[in-house]
Image 1: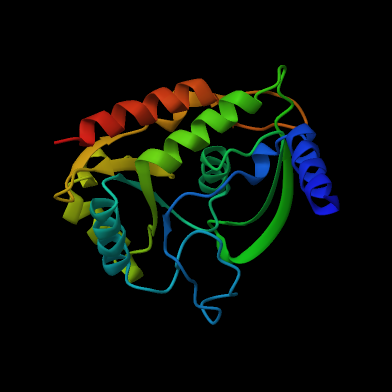
Image 2: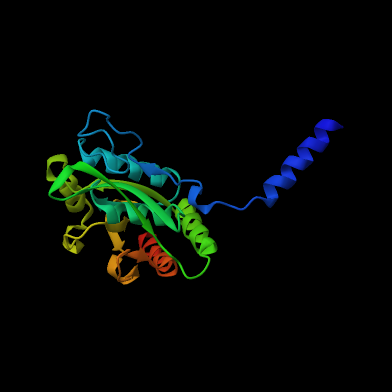
Length: 219
């Protein structure tokens, strides 16, 4: 009887606790592992030392196996906006802590914190965005270094002619691995001026863009 009461109490407490959307369940993403000997061994998203073509192919195979669409985030570990995009599709909000780099010093890492300072509670929008990504995409991060054949992924998929040299370049491919559509990041940015300057993303617009390029990737 005591065990039953404890179980019920635990369930009730769990139901009363607020949902933390910043720790939403992650989606299927590639690469799966990172070489600790690669550069400074602090990579979070992009494999900066390995051939990118096999990484892309493994992710595409997984997408087809799971009946999902492959979403490619073409960028770099030093690119803070690549990490910001990732944080949004992971369902995070309000506070964003990052380890990032700079183009002129790609092997050096810096720490920073951005605050979204949203005017309203965005928990529902954050969860809806994260849920859509989890249910519809396999995500692969392809680094834009020529030394690791990142440019060959663009050429292989046919996305090269749509690439404007700005990262992250986020696009989808069809089951055959060919380009189907991409997101124009500038169209979904929220710009704010001031000392706490931060380019946030409009979650509703981002979700709409993801739905569109998902649809374009369907047979």
